[in-house]
Image (tube, rainbow, N blue to C red; front, side, top):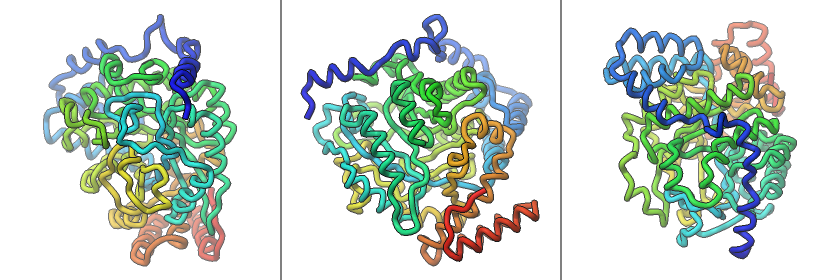
Length: 488
């Protein structure tokens, strides 16, 4: 194990101030707290006509401005909230149709030099069993995931020299190399600590999917109180995705951990983050936005002692709907942190990505166990991938395993153009049908396959272009005959 002095030296070498200062204006970042609170205050008690005008703007797939989002956050009228929820669902259908993308998290290391008070991985937590997977162990995990039917992963690393850029890069390359029967992982998204520009370039050249960094909280003082270690530098983290995009990674993902500070402030923070990315990168903002709620973790008493800002189920529905309307063209990720009944309520409100069959213990998939002493937090939805797909099918949703846009270079400004105009559905819809068919042929239980075939028939009927529908049917036949990885 690395000595303490070696860790200190490593931490001191990580932050490159010059890599984020250039994005700041007069030494200030884009989170102006006074401005946020001013907008939340001045937009209280909005008139119905004003709210409905904002909803119409969202339906045109145009991003909202901070005053407009603040207005929605201030709605008190229950009938208006029903209209907001309904519009959020319409916006999602307009951009993404009935598709729900699925993925699985794969935690590769839980060593961490940071001390975040709410996190099970904080360095002084003696109840966590520390583990970094070897390449042999990674292969066992990936094969177990492929046997479930997964095609997309998000790999997760703690911030530690044992999970440096070399380990991250080599582990991702290894994952891409693994085949199991007819299955493989076609897209590896990454949740890792903020990196230096030269390191992002390495990941770009490997061909990763989306790079994800959550700010946790956008409130400066709360951030300062809760974080120690490298992560204590608010700006190094805040501009992590600016550096990623500068390095050529044009699919990035933002998020906040709801429960650390006022949820309305955090929603505004996510919007300001989106606006600043779009400002610096020709209108290209985050590919996805996540909104996890704070969960308990072993050896971490923060959750029980700090409940002031915990988000109720009612407010959680509201914040998700407002995020959907604020950034109508961006994917929204709802994870298995949430209970099945909450995920069911959120399904109509604009969510586009869900994980199923998830296990966040390091090395747990191949063992088929849930080891709480290796987990960063607790999960609340332990349904298998097949159970999740069956549930989605019963709700008329088609599960998509599609990775075509990423592999065909339809990312960044290309994806944003099609998403903002609602045209991405024309590409993603047929590809969702094809990847769903692969799952039904190779992995589905009988009841899931039966329900899934009904969904495919319905989705085929929604393709109005006769030539395209004929081509999709041809590809479906080829999949039944054993071909794989067909896409438009």
